[in-house]
Length: 326
Image: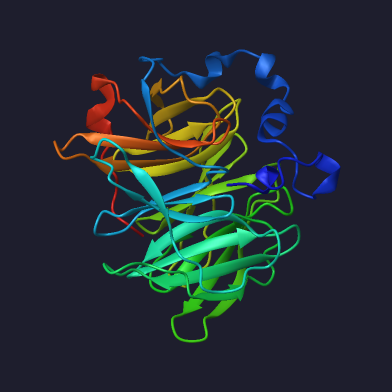
């Protein structure tokens, strides 16, 4: 979920954020160094099953009732029939006027609401819609002032959202306070700025901590009692481009965009394994419970333009229990 993926059909000079993830990762050019520093055990291919076509997949979220939503380049979709022979993506209706060329880069579910972020070359916007069994629609929109290139979004505690902004090419996060009424009102304020080399991307909040991927790092930023950001801790560093991730009860599951795989690490960042090497351009990942109780891992494959399910090696299934929310 980074600005580097906006306007992929244009040359880099045509868009302020059009620097490819691979270039960002290999711009580390250190990839020719020993990849042994990743210290991960490869544990199998993790066969992939294509579920549906999806152009520009960026975010995967699940509501409390188990509904799965995914963003594509031009909208938000609900996954239907996951357990059927032919799963399909149904567009979530958008009943507001969007700015021209606004591309969807983030999504979050919070207290019965679905939120989505869309980004143009210079501005970002927040859309909101109530989750309902009769059908969800995005019905309100507001500009995220001060956020140029929203690249990831996560629900925090209360009425707070966290949005990663890749405009400065560093690990910047904004806190967004949402007032749920008509019209939608949002207050956006800078929350965290690493001031280091990075590329803010995936963001998740869990247990009073906000986690952020930035180029090859995963950061943990505690939320202080006054709501401000505490001192950031580097959970892990890899010679690759870490895209999005999911916080698990016993660690993290991350998408490795550069090497086309999923990385599983424990809470201290130590490698537990890697799988799904058959994916191409994995961006977002979501662990959902299957009907047999076993974890089901969904992945957006940007380079192949689809949403897929990957098989989890038996030796790793016990680690894939999602953690509680913020």
